[in-house]
Length: 294
Image (cartoon, rainbow, N blue to C red; front, side, top):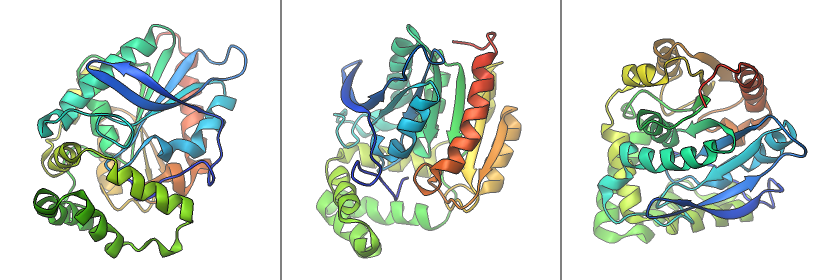
């Protein structure tokens, strides 16, 4: 669901571009390691619909400086990650199983703190329901189920028949007409265009279908988490899932809730300093508790 992306000329970082093996393929990723022993944990960052690993560029170096290994990925079918050809394989359940496999691999060496932004939050939930061995879950600008009626959902419903009938270039033209890139730096506009056009059509259709139809699975997630800590975070002006709905989701999960000022749906790019101020104290507290899962 990301509208804003990032690129190295705008948010310089020291992460390396790598490919990480998963069942039936690999995920494109940005990876950075802390100096010294660090906290013995990896933050695994999962982007939203039309997003990519670059959405987390402002967080990479600060999280590594705080002692964390950091891995930001493109989901299967997003930008630089190849994906399956069936739309149904891009729903939160199947993608969650792919993510759970990656978590299991990472957890062999470090405790895993899993963060999912927007649609990535639904996928992260799917990973937990699939048994991913995490030591903490953060849902960023994500909701209990499908997007509620509103402008973002309306755009998905308008774009779907265009994508099926006329292809991804026609949808890109629609996106640019709706949001002209006149105020965006050239590097950012280029990334937004390249990553959308590089995305899988089945992936875009499958994820859009889930954003319009995913059921509320919060109660299932609460059971699956058990004693594993959880944090729900959103921008104070989030225009995707209402703030009240995300706050209520936190209550149902028994999770902490944090509201990021001066941010909308993507605090990771709109107010990364404020987001880090919410994430790091919670994550350090989770890691200090040696009883957490992982």
